[in-house]
Image (cartoon, rainbow, N blue to C red; front, side):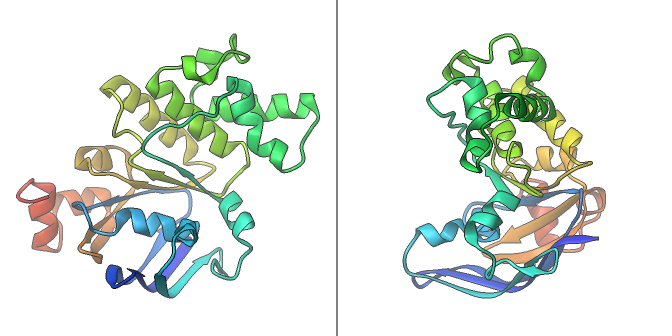
Length: 248
């Protein structure tokens, strides 16, 4: 079942076209990796999905994107961003405690009861595979966490507002292998409840964690398919050249 459907999506920054008539579907409760060399439109694609591009001037967008059959360009942007959360490459905890970082979003949405906030924080931290590591120090500063723990805290902060889709923009680019593994394990645990889209420059990571993979090149979707199939028998030679390291 398609959670997101994209049809003829094109996007320009001023006169620079970042996406060129992209069309495909994102399957519900799957992890989709988006791979490709720099300047392929991967991050732009994520920014379209929760309309972060609206923070910039001089942009033009054409095409359609549906979330559960609803046109995302007609949704209230705050509603959309609650339904479609994003985790960035650099973890940026808020200057407050671990507990308050995770409770921040629910409080913005009007939840004040301490018992309810406690339930939300615990559930989000468990889902992000961080609870066991921090449950005895929830009132300490989030800045005292390691880089990998901070990234999982940012995932928990996203989960606390109960999105339907989680976008990741290079979430492990600054992490060591052990921290990367923990983030990837958290992503696997989240599949039963969330649809996830991972932009990564690490093709090995895409092969490890994703169910489906899309290869972008110079703003175009070259091909998309089941990850094992795409990595073992890609249909397009450009895909094969990229995943085998011949360019990119």
